[in-house]
Image 1 (cartoon, one colour):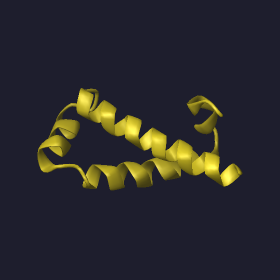
Image 2 (tube, rainbow, N blue to C red):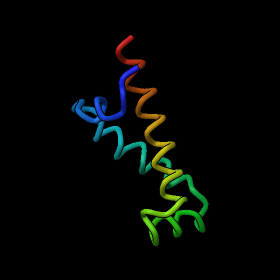
Image 3 (cartoon, rainbow, N blue to C red):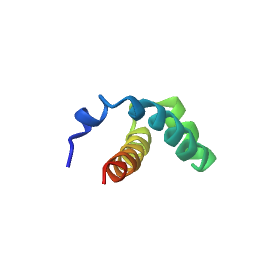
Amino acid sequence: MQHIHELKQQPEYWKLHKRIWEEEFNNLDLDIAQLVMANPMGPEADQLEKKVIIKIEDDLLHKKI
């Protein structure tokens, strides 16, 4: 399995990141979304980022198979 730093070097990574982050953010409850925007380094934003990274890894790694 590739490490996330290696995946970030792929041209598709940031395009996927933007699309997936926006989709996930738009699916958040309004209160959580407001917390993410108010504190981008907070625990809610961290959880969102972890979820996004998992989805990106899954997408990029399955394309290689």
